Amino acid sequence: MTIAPPAPAAPFGDSDRGAPVTSADGATQWGTPREDWPHIAREIADDLATDAVEREQAGKLPLDEVARLRESGLLTLLVPAERGGGGADWRTAHTVVRTVAAADGAVGHLLGSHYFLSYCARFFAGPDRAARIERTFAAGQWYWGGGIASQEPPLILTPTANGYLLDGHQRYGSGVGVADRLLVRAAVPGTGEPVAVLVDTAQAGVVSGGTGDTFGQRLAAAGGVSFDSVPVTRDEVLGSLSSDDGALSPFAGLAAPTARLVSAQFCLGVAEGLLGEVREHGRTVASPWHPFSPQPWSGGPPQDPYVLTAYGELAVAARAASALADQAGDALTRGLERGEDLDDEEGAEIAVLASAAEAAAARAAQEITTRALEAVGATAAFARHGLDRFWRDTRTHTLREPVAHRLREVGDYFLNGAHPPFSLPA
Image (tube, rainbow, N blue to C red; front, side, top):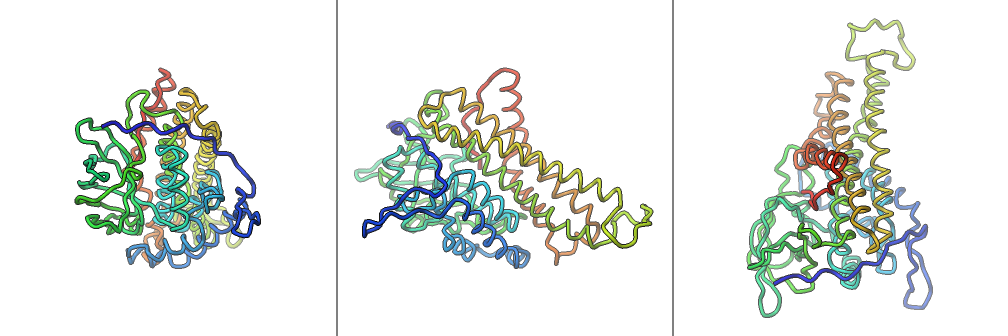
């Protein structure tokens, strides 16, 4: 059996006010203004920051955290307003992910993964079915988890008279412990074609292992999930994930750079969150290099040249990676607006920019979350400060997405003009 390719997707444009919504009485209403979503994200982040250390150390399932995101309306941020969502674009979503990750890396990861997975209906299901899914998603305020990474052994999707049965075990999925719906990768028997499948977690036979058993992102509810003869309708098989040449349109191929840029924004958010915290330490605590540095500057702002240089280097790393991520985000937005008019070369350029942005953000985050602790000194090791969680969250994430793969893609495109392969991240 071969899954038919999705129908051409329509371009997705921007609007400062979101799209109009016609209520039952015929009145026209508008979604939340775009400028309000970053403010809402900031309020959520401030709330999360008040007890981030205690929650991270407790390591419980993030049921309350997801409830906060749901109540704020952030879960349906990217759903068009006429379908019941926030009507925002990916520029806004990137800002939101970064803001939340700066306060709580695990919750930022939960939200970023949710945005990517819930948006995949547009890439793989075609516009009509995507619209139906998004309306139901918005009405139910689902949180999406799972993963469709190519390195995962595919689940088995067996046809039946009424649809399919899904079997197998997925080793890693994001948010599987708290998700209302899972998007997973499955293979069709006979052809082996990989397809994206949407699964209701309330179905019998879905067993989640999302216990936070990692040294970082302990509140991301990530882990393995098993499926034992789980019923799947035909509508819940979104479409092909094949990496064969010509199997996917250039528009569907934008799924990969979309995921890469979510990863980049997560890394930048965690790095900027740590920089914000250690800056306060740097202003109030004596230099960690004392007495090696002569300090004739008692009182006033810090003047230790070692400290100033260290913070300067970290600030430059963060700003440079941020600028590249913004450039790639703008390119992605233009590609999404072109829809099925996007050609292969344009898609490749976007993919390369996204790979470069993810590599730069990951490297900056690893450098910042290591060296910023050195700038603080020995007090950075105190558990009550919780500064180690930034390093652990970053390292847990970057272990799943090695920078070397992104650099190889960028180098091959630069030297040989080779288009990056369609590869979805964990």
